Length: 263
Image (cartoon, rainbow, N blue to C red; front, top):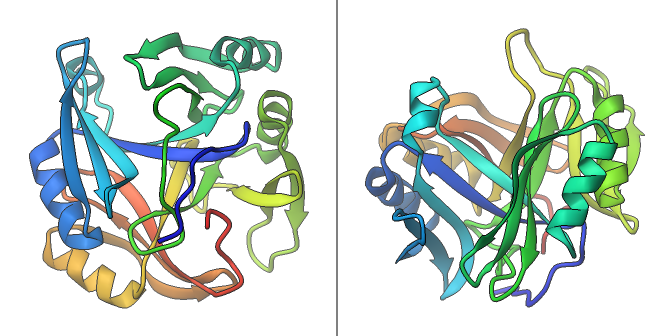
């Protein structure tokens, strides 16, 4: 299995799920991706769940805080980007016109994180590693493959992420919807696009690598997931968009051999 021991600053390196029912979510994703779990109490009195493949960290999950539920926020997947210094990243974000949703704080001995919003409203977490680097395995079934921002203003978002993470933006010619590729040191690491329909708020979405998109979609449907976009062939591979039984959206992709930026 492709394993990593460190992430360069500016790399999308980890995802975790904020959900209303962690026990049900664990069962769903275990069936879909083969994840196994470790549970660890946190210093805030909650429990953090680490999803593993072959003993290596693939993702995480936790119970959605009560105040977020009261605000009507849906369960969601969060994207993390590695940085050398969480405080410095927060400062760059403020100077670039972003908002600080949560200032930098320690996550026990694992690392230091902060939660930021770009000027268009897309929320992203930054991760300064200590004992925990984030994701440790990529390029196989059940691992993070791609992060994608949906925003009405890709230009403003791209300028922000260039200042905060050093990403370069490359606009790709597309027949229907313009697409922006984000690169770090010339390596594709994410993308951005306009909402495909009205009413979709700015957000970062995730793509999970799978061996067989059609089989995963049918399995997810049988487990109570909603299929928002049926399997379709795209230039990077065969993909589909799903919503888990608790309401968190994610996509899966059976990537072509020449597209695996996280491997």
